[in-house]
Image 1 (cartoon, rainbow, N blue to C red):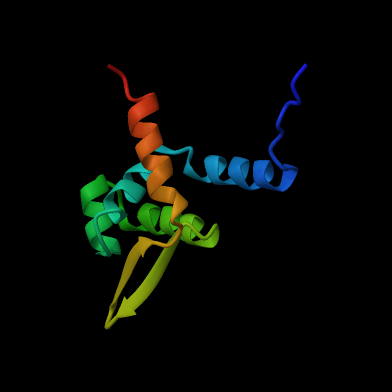
Image 2 (cartoon, rainbow, N blue to C red):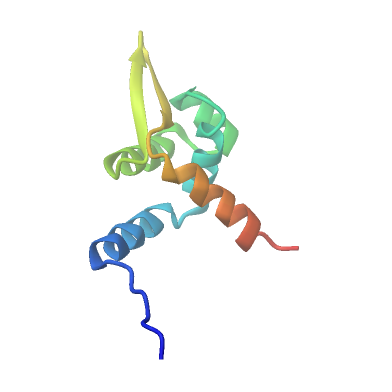
Length: 100
């Protein structure tokens, strides 16, 4: 019988936390938007069809988990992808979970 390869528990825990964080349609959309560049909060809110305060909550959560980074430019705060794994996750979701 061949030896079964197991994933390290720390990797499993980190992956599960990332999936929990991203398990919301708005956060998936925000990630897809940020894969195209840095966007101001109001731009992300408009593109997602969300009120700015809800958008800020999603952005804060994603940034807190190291998925996004922010940069202040004058009065605006711009968000971009910080985790190199996030675009891979979004592409996996598109390929594997999209209907059709």
